[in-house]
Image (cartoon, rainbow over all chains, first blue to last red; front, top):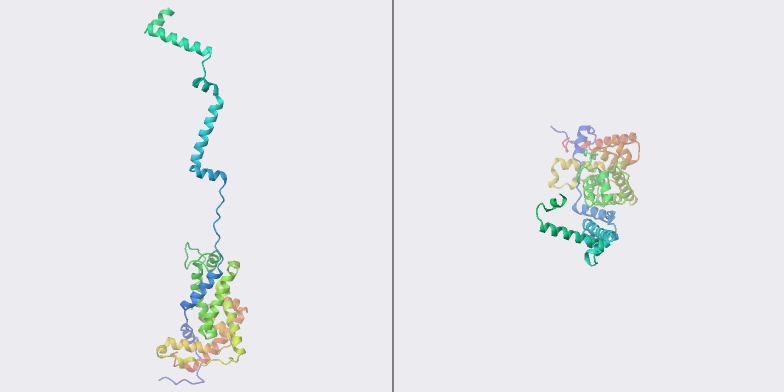
Length: 132
Length: 198
């Protein structure tokens, strides 16, 4: 019961037009087109900013050579301690190692020796006798 | 058919949740994946539009590549939020199509190609294909501006203000173009109503 198409047929209504629009062909980009587009993208892409590597200074280089800041800190502390000991009491170090004792020190050593001897002769309460 | 608009939410990785603006910024910053995502979003729509305007897939592909090339070049200068990237891309594609149509006319190709129903092969006998073919042919009978407006509005699903920006005309002019275009299509296809099952 369908009518043959006529040149003067009534125009399509909105529903019919929408059905046509919905069927509108939608070609998909081919792989070749996508490749062309992405090749252009790679050609014109700005370069990513390179990470800035700071130049290492003298102290940082030294720290790296000795194994890091903690090691260098320990080394510095030991060095300062040695310098302090050397400058603060050099005479005591000299006496101990290679200088002769002066008179006062000799008397002190002698007194100690006499007391030790007395304690050796009179063990126990010998000293109480002397003080009565 | 309306396309889902990308939201403003930012995702932690590449994907559909990144805005077009964000993807373009990533591309401009050297991100290697952003171009693929932008191409996947824009190229199919641009190709559909250009193909309907030019009725020539090879030329339409050239227009899409040229549009995307311009997009890559302007990426470092793009101001996020100043305009919609898809609108910008459609405007470029629209202008490129117009240029090609003018050149065609310049060499005597003003005549619109006949509907390609004769070329419909055995596999294209399905109703959807018939309708698509008939629509494409009918679209070619419209003046360029009407065709642009109708395709952008009723096939690409853009809003009238977006189309106005693309075509650089007023929203009222867009409404007028689409209304006249639809009327012309309805009249052109009236004789094929039965054939197309409408």
